[in-house]
View 1 (tube, one colour):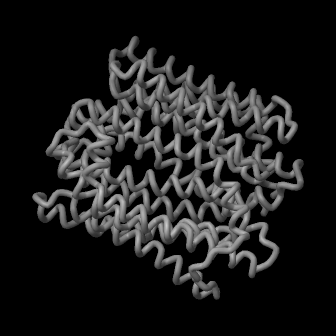
View 2 (cartoon, helix red, strand yellow):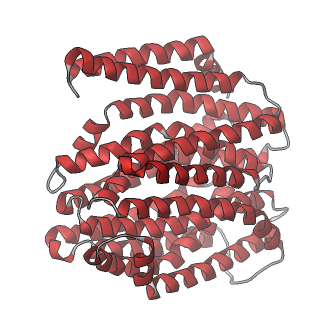
View 3 (cartoon, helix red, strand yellow):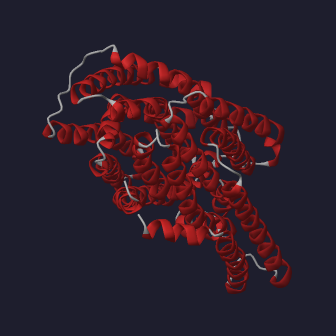
Length: 495
């Protein structure tokens, strides 16, 4: 697929993801307005975090091996057999997880949180309702990947939009009756999960795909490839539980602050990086036998991400307080909540560059069938994260996001070393990228220090001008003299 086609498909998916994130922000704005950083919001965000954690665990464990298996299937019959086996496996797994979470919600909440009794009771009621949707959302993983494998990305993304729209409709009842808390939103997540799978089901039935509960031996190879990934994902999701456990023992509202800070950062990931990597993954699989073409495609992608993500991340870092204030400072979400959330957001937003490298390079390795090294690197980086948090957790909640930033830098570096050996590349693009990153960080920090020193202000037009001019000069100079900007437009013009 040419670059024009890649960017066109990315734009389609981005529009859907942008809509879902806008709805998600509206949802979070309502939560912040109605309940602030409170026991109710802490209970909901923690319960939903468990839901997302389990979904991501299965999604990230199966997609590295399952999507290439779909793409490389010899014929439509083999592809159908793999699909039916994968769907059956995930449906059964989802059913038992839903049942377990529903029956043992109280034990789980008491085990993995430091919530006081009142907050724990609320979290248990939310988790019991949300967990009933696990069977549907886990089953939708295989339908999502199956649709993407045919380069039909829009129908798959529509399921995500339906999921978010449903939840946004149900939360409106909380405006009418605050006494019910966020119980209706929990019901909306359950309903949205079912409708997401139903959307995929309707599309695939119209394409002539039959849904059968069956297990075929061809799925065993996919299952074996997924096993190493499971270990890495286990540590990755364990990190989320670990962070939530540490933060739940801090001041009331800390879990909400951490969740909101991460979700604001996640906006650029979901709207830009996920659609871009979703389109590229089948492309990498199809050209993996041509290392020269793959190398050009990989580093063309990095050039694109460099141009887009560096300004986003560093300007957001500079104006973290202002961004959180504009988004959430209203109703019950007061100044204290803003400061707490902004402190977490600061290092989360700096992480997006290295998250992009992680996702992109991991998909390259998965395209080669290498499902061992990315999980190993993930385990190493998460162990570092846990050690760092335990060592410095007394310094406050911002240590969580700082540890996350550092562990993404570490994993990106390890992945690059592996990619460099695999594709036999030089050091040109790596030196340029990390040099630009360093210049960007330095310029922002200097501009912030200068703003304090000259004007003694935290925000305002003078600070905006100084930070904008200093960063822009360094950043654009780096792009021009490194040749990245010229190479990017050359590749775009020539497809």
